[in-house]
Amino acid sequence: MTFVRIDGIPHHIRVDGTGTSASTGAGRPVCLLSGGLGMCWFDWDLVVPLLAPYRTVVRFDRPGLGLSGPGPAPAHAWPTLTGEAQRIARVLDAAGVHTPVTVVGHSLAGFHCEAFARLYPERTAGLVLVDSSVEEEPRPSRAPALRNAATRACGSLLAGAGLPRALGPLLRRTAVRTVRRSRNGRGDPAPYDLVRRAYSTSRSLRAALAENATYRDQAVELDRLRERPLPDVPVTVLAAHADGESGARRWLDRQERLAEGLGGTFRVAAPAGHLVMLDRPQDVAAAVLDEPVRPFPAGQEEERTHRR
Image (spheres, rainbow, N blue to C red):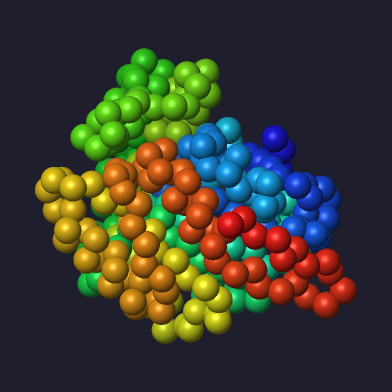
């Protein structure tokens, strides 16, 4: 594991797989994994072993989440879509990645990774959206200043009451079990010591609240950003599905429309809940590995070996 400062904030970064060095990706394709709202690097632990023999895999924690340091002062802490796309670029720089990468975004991070592809087309080899957030007609938040003030106050109140230390890990475990129980009947595979380190701090609570508060703003920002074309790279939308779940068919329809709108391939992971990387890690890995590898710039070795 590595810690690097990006805009003065310590960011936790992990690089796995063959070819992990200061010249990451010189001989092997690279993929970057970014988790959804409030999630951590270890939420990809079941996927990474399936990718590492064929890809160099980069993971990171956004400010306040996982092992990364807290974000800047509250007045400047609100996440923006452009800021998150820039963060991905800075993480790749810090990891020594100078070749195009496949960016893989789950849930809210689907917004971030699509924005990265549109803002940094020369650095994008492919885009994989894992049960990504979808907003067909996003509307901006009303009274954002009031919302931000309320979010700050809520974070301060809950942190002051000791909620993160007392209940943070339990709430994380309960949320994961709830999402998975209705589909696969399995709990949280993450080791408890990692869950405790990541979710028993006020910084993780404040970060999750900030991401939730700015969700609609990021959806609106992405809608505007879609005026920029996507690079000519493969796009895959992988949707979770579980028979018998309320609204499952409507969710699949929304995900399929997302794939059509992006000119991408639509795939279904089943049976799976929203945390596809936990329920069907093999489907996430296949979505990455089945995408053709974009040739590296002249003078660099190209890895053409695929799993199949």
